[in-house]
Image (cartoon, rainbow, N blue to C red; front, side, top):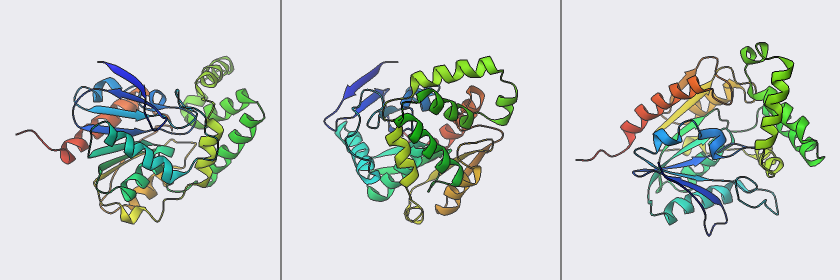
Length: 269
């Protein structure tokens, strides 16, 4: 499967892969498209065109010169899909990307046809708010290893932590540090400020909400609140899954997402 990485007029680095109905991917804070969707890109690209923009400071997108704005980010991502020839498309959001997806759906109801919201939130709960604050403070102070340690501890499940030795955790922290983009503090600053609670009742497209019951970064109740607030949303829970889905949990996620997409996408005659 061919993957293209292009810098569009929006100034954002965009992964483009596959053919077929478009799926706009909105990633989480402190990572990128590969970090969130890497395990399923090839599968989804078999019959979809994947559009994965990187936020400022992620991928090859330059770091922002001012705080990120949710409306601006949602508008730029929608514009990217349209510029690539896709008038209507579903949006798959993860973590912070769920707020981007929701705002895109309410600002551009003529474009967005469906939402898949995974390990998301409408407003920062006390757990993710504290993690966002600490990661910002540490990263801005140059303490990136400490920021990576908080990210690892927050994204691992209780079961994973109990089975991980100190040496293995140190290796994971080192690997995580290498993947944290320079825009990480800006992303988590946006995490601390977003609030799409008033948007939820306005979402008028089919929505699948995926909750991870073992999430230690965003409270699982925050995931469920998305489904509670969006009219007609379907909630699927992944028992014991963490904020970053493991390979088995991602495989389960893929089955649910593919089943959902068959109900919302047009079928060929």
